[in-house]
Image 1: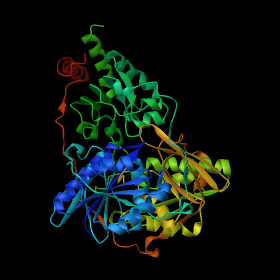
Image 2 (image 1 turned 180 degrees about the horizontal axis):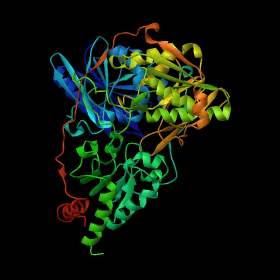
Image 3 (image 1 turned 90 degrees about the horizontal axis):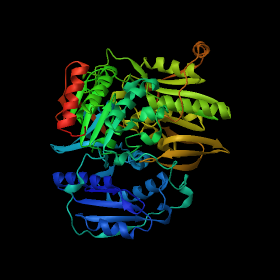
Image 4 (image 1 turned 180 degrees about the vertical axis):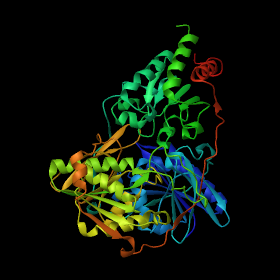
Length: 327
Length: 256
């Protein structure tokens, strides 16, 4: 058992950016452990994608190809990767922590008597093995984990935790791996992915976003935040629970299941900052957080913070903004 | 349709978390507990499916005695009965260990559908459901926003990233992990609370279930995250803080 195998993800003929971050994590393990790094891509008709794979610094690339892998199914991916992992016998298998990986990787790991160490934000060599860091309680605490026993160590890495820019270019040979699959073993039938009604709000291009979370407590309190957004000339957005409740339309949701934004100013009001939200806004140029809990994870990414009751702070802020604008 | 809903009890949101003396876990002494939020949505979906198709809803929980409270609440909302795997050692198990217990406790139930939340608010690993499906040898789908059942099969709406969705069909029995917000949560009625007292709770001692292999993954230490960004905290009364922040927005961020 040796080596690191990174499983890359793609959609619509292009690699998911998080795939390269997973590869960067794999590279970090490879250099710390002195073990070779390989990467695999799964699907059908992978010519173009495997060309790109060949341009990376890898011991080896694998294109795992089968007609039944054209569309993602958990059964198909698990059967195919199970065969590849048995053949390669790697010490580490690394994935990007995407929705798709969440769907199949825990089950794949269980086939090897293993547990997926999911959503890692860091790792480091410690003695003969590694310490893996992940978040608990929606980002309020960090935890160090260790893997023991025989069998490959399955890992998935959080979006943005490893830097794809650090990847080294190279010239890798890419081998085709044809898994044994039959249609009867794939139990689910997926339809083509779709988007709900066309988006009418493009938060991605808004220079100022005023975003509201659970702290607002009731729908009736929303106008207070809308007034601030208006005073600043910004778009209103929200964390998931607000949209789940139907208080604001889903298209105004920022986070892993909603929009990813990077405005000049992101003002987070009553948002604790669960990771699902942070991945959607941490690219903002300036983040301001207003929250009553000084330990809320949102302050981890905030440039400016006010620890206080939003019901006092927001109206005061609206007034101050209006005054500054001379309105 | 016979539906099992696996629910977890977690510290209430906004709990003031303190790390315990060993540094391995949080100090649980003064904490209050509640149902894991995505699991509440899984329960709601199960109750709605039962209302549409008939059948039975069974709540399944592994945990110490305090879990009884969360079970009672599930029964009060409308679950027909419950299974409580009594154990104090959850922290020493990994996902496989916990899923093994859940699988052993329900294998004779022969449920048509098993639902659970997509992840827990405490550990957030998001895999107990998926691993349970593996142990039971049934198909699964994750992060589900809609379920339609009929003719021994289900059609579900899976949430993908960036506002994308996908419909997936699969035969029953199957396991689904439910996304928060799939529908509106109900409250327990007074009648429901009364009825809950007479409903059956099957208590299973973890010691009577087959022992799983030793954990391959161990939690070594919990700690407060280090701040990566230097946050300028603005103090003063709300009015003073607001005025100072506007100065920053005007002269440093330059958005006013």
